[in-house]
Length: 33
Length: 151
Image 1: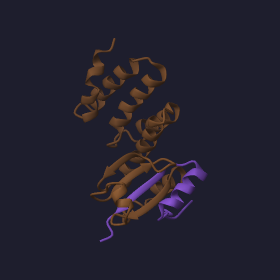
Image 2 (image 1 turned 180 degrees about the vertical axis):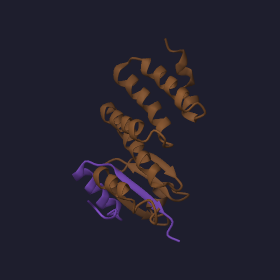
Image 3 (image 1 turned 120 degrees about the horizontal axis):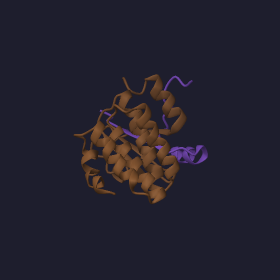
């Protein structure tokens, strides 16, 4: 089992993974402050 | 959410199994403008082309995040007219997360999905009756109110 969420940080890479893995993207916009 | 929700084991496992997680600062352009982000956390479900199908704004604990993601995944499939997959997500919420804030919408969407996939309006009335029984004050019960008249 994974020990943490392995976030992508770039939309392009997430889209590529989404197509390859057949999964939707969960996009979290967070407050950087 | 980085402090409490995302370290939760059930959340980690759900995300790993079901979605590609993407985390972006709300001041990162052009994404923030493209997705019209005005408050955080803004949590979106996107399809493989980057089209948005579901959004929530504000903190969510682990007990609410998983059913919310399931709802978003269900709505993605619903929007693509893949009612079998949509129903699978909605049923998961109804059976395993019935106390969550996402449950009433899932029941509503389950009724609509069944109607759209069979042309039988009875599931719409059943959705209203279920909502009226379990969640009488919820907004989705009010939205389903006209379905009570279906014969």
